[in-house]
Image (cartoon, rainbow, N blue to C red; front, top):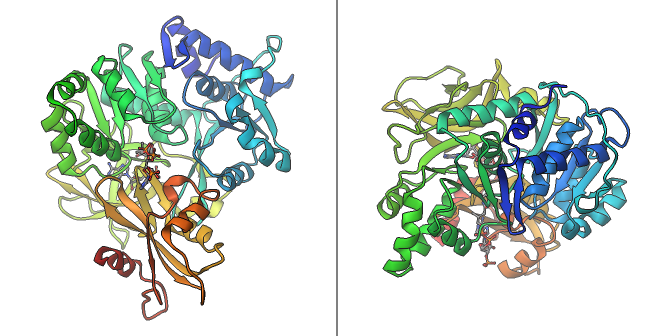
Length: 498
Ligand code: MCA
Ligand code: AMP
């Protein structure tokens, strides 16, 4: 029987170590065997789960990979959940995806028990799966749906981005070709595994290449420094905030300590930054400290990676380079005219096998996000001396903080449930470490009071930590235009003045 290519490849990598965690080493063979157990339990005697949505909440490591592959091998759609999501966010994703089952680890089972009970969703504990007798697995057509990732946008609630097996394969193969992935590579994995950056760029590219992953529950600077000083890695991928934090920490060390760590960074084959703009100053500082020229690339949940500085060739600070293999890019101005000449700004539009197929159960949003078969990213760019440079988003309601894309509208909708809040405007304000930080201007109900600390406390059970406002202004009225609509650029200016 024909297997999914990632499984076929894993079978040939056999006894090589695929992933290392604090619990030890796991070979490619173990991943395949574990995925068979997950698939058999999901199939439960049936032939194919027929694109049932199977969610999972698991820390990075072998159980995550076995579950993702197991869902695929049973014919399901994998829906990875965020480890830092609040209960309401988890419930939203499970309901929207109409998940029929959730796979969890023993330590995370409690987090989902109540939600799943209320919604009639089957909970499977990956640590206690019965060893069902060997079961024939279905053959999976590459054009079947494989994954749903939830992403915030210009609508209040996150949308599910659907990709097929063929789309995921195209995203992986493009990066392997462009960045020279090889079986001798070793990469640390500390990015969250409910987004493309962690799932495709780091984890899946490594597994496709028979490389080795060291998985961590989250980003911990001290641990990473220790392992880098051991020369544990050849490839490193992070968001700009992480490089800013690493620079700060390196600069605070003694010369001896710093030298030991810096040598580990200097010896790596490749260091990449993405998910948000990498300030040219950070690019230059990193080069000064480590001798490594960060390779900056541009991507999006809906398209995987699209534009990248070259592996061999000029890695230009402040620019994202050229379209990746197999990816077509055009820039369009507001009147819908292509403007691919030098120095003329336009919206980035993308076409190719890397592009997602649909927003889950949102036909209209899917239709509106394409023009003549090209996906409209909402990001503006310009070509300068042959390279693309990102200018920013066309929507002020999208905030990028610590590499996470946040919807101002979604945060506003949550805050409006607060009993003291009459009106609010959420914006992103520039921040050296986080790129942008979430700020909220509020009009309170008469006689009510609210400070940042109590608002943050109230938010804790409702939204993910990175969506919680870090700045707050109480105002008598919000700035509005002649039509009565809140003008967000004026709100941002209010914050910049304080
Ligand atoms: C946390 N803190 C923040 C923020 N997040 N403050 C301001 N803004 C924020 N966004 C505060 C916490 O409240 C805490 O404060 C302190 O910072 C440390 O929090 P912690 O969570 O421990 O921070 P961290 O572990 O250092 O997290 C930073 C991080 C993380 C590692 C950069 O945000 C992260 O993993 N980001 C990557 C997200 C990602 O992978 N995005 C890719 C999606 P206190 O100490 O006061 O409590 S984009 C994508 O996939 C596309 C396709 C692409 O192009 O890649
Ligand atoms: P997400 O929707 O979470 O996948 O985030 C995708 C968004 O991140 C893109 O639409 C861009 O706005 C932003 N982004 C990703 N990479 C870069 C980059 N190198 N420079 C600037 N913005 C970026």
